[in-house]
Image 1: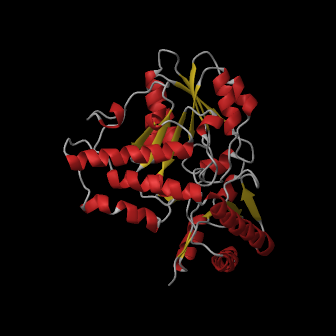
Image 2: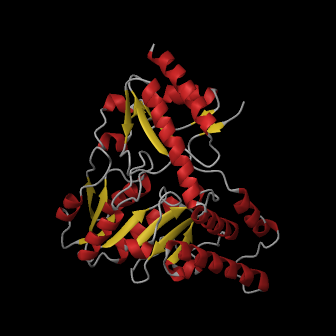
Image 3: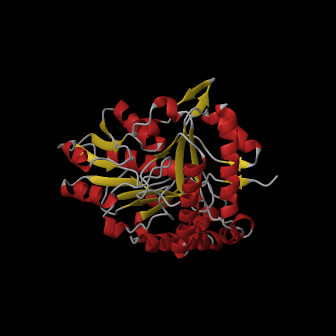
Length: 379
């Protein structure tokens, strides 16, 4: 059975050119980059070259780039690291109700040790209110963390305007750009971002490697105790193959940006059109225009999302739902609830995210099966 994969927001396959570039660093050029002999020094140079490549793509300085294990660690390092390093300035953080759990749970940890956090509402499209953001700023506010684009509904936030507000009040601004990179052009200098998180496996790079950008004048502290790697800001033996891979994946994403996004946007719009014309009682979630090119999140009334996913899986279709089954209970997506989707409707949500290997016939196969399965489940 052919597998048709529509869950690129969860992870992407490693690009074969990326894998080819990584392979020598597993078995041949395997030296520890912190070692003082030739093999180690060579790999240290490779890491610094990768840092320069990424800095050029993001339009920042190479010494502002740090490598981590992925988006979750990147979010933790930035939010906790900046908050703890600046607690003498203040103890207030602003974020939103639809952030990734890595951001929300980092903020909850900080609340447990004396920080205060404001969780901003979003409108029905999933966009924060800039006026509400500004109203919640006070003399103790030290950090604003708002995601670039939402992982469930694909909505893109007004990042430039948020950064302008943060700068006006001398507040550091972080954005989780894990879903955005490769789908939205990111120019750090133009956007005036202070800190940013990325994860390699979201743009056809390897799992287990991420990127942190922190502007050089922003104080932050390390989260792990250990060696002196990453300018003493992120301890642990450097993942040389992963770093080589994420840098190459970033290059490919940058070079293929227009062609890639044109393709997946066409597939997404065709999917929306097909579903709207063939399946009744649906709700498309998120903004129709201010959204990631390949993201489609739809609620199907009267449907159990877990059962829908299971039926799709039986037919070789991989997608995801906003609801999760735990101990026999169905939990609603907090993102969908935050944008005002009725709780009973959230149970029937389906997130489809398109990628480079998808073609128009895959979309038609998906919709044909969706229509059949939903009719069966509703009956």
